[in-house]
Length: 88
Image 1 (spheres, rainbow, N blue to C red):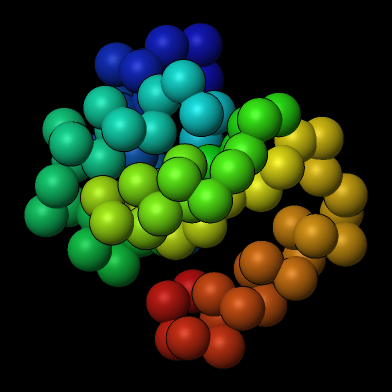
Image 2: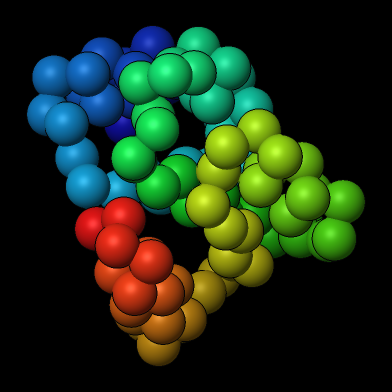
């Protein structure tokens, strides 16, 4: 998606199993969709990840943070972890 409103519209229309979200939009996405994202894992990707960002994402209802660029192996591991927790 090219913008946050487009992303929110897409999530509401398509009901995806997972959202990969740029670090620039994650906070606003989680705030606007509070309650609608209860079972939708939001994984944030960013080139500058640290413990504070990870904690902020988790506390706001996101699932995880991936350091970009991330490998296919990292993404698969995150998806398997989500499945293991019964979310996907």
